[in-house]
Image (cartoon, one colour):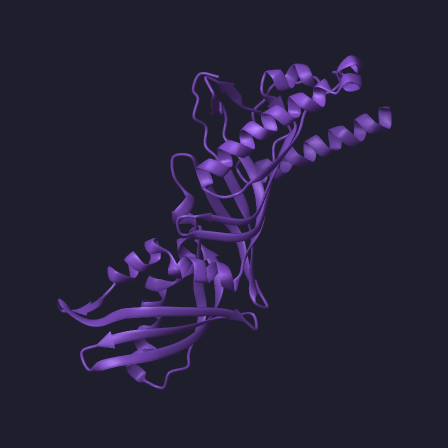
Length: 281
């Protein structure tokens, strides 16, 4: 038992250290980690039913808010605590997370703090503290296609003519993108004052100011004009740069700490935060 408590405390300290490194303030519920579950609740399955209830409530709300199929799994302290909305850990999974301009594959998130709390009243879920998760996910070629074909992205393209002295010299007609060989490759069809042209380029990526931006851009179209203007055009239409803008709002936000192209997939890591919406708790 003593060995188990040492392991448990080490885990808790480790989670708190991880949170501090990311400037996350974990709530302090004053939970006594020696508090045991009532054997009756274990034997009758009441603890399982109680956890399933709050798990389903959270799962349904997230699926509705993010307009995606979310699977939630909760780990509780005991029945007494879960009745107060207090729990140890929450994990979220989605095979395809699609919300506005965001499209992610194999999204997996797990709460960072060792103590978490929600409040369910009047058939609504409230968060007295930010509910913070560390997550990992992928951006596949299908995800990029989803973004490019979305109404939001197409509307952005229409608002992005390249002008010089008030005259539109470039108008972006279409964008195609493919992940392969640890690079992201673009083909852009552009209408100019002299006719239509097609430019091709490839790039690596990096995270800058919570956005996935292009770096080490290589233009494959033999034209000095295109080579000089390609970085400006690319930075304006990079579909994966809109990921955080799409989800950050009143309900939740997402932070990208790492993004790397591996073969034909972008691997992401970061924070997913459900914002506090209840005061004076």
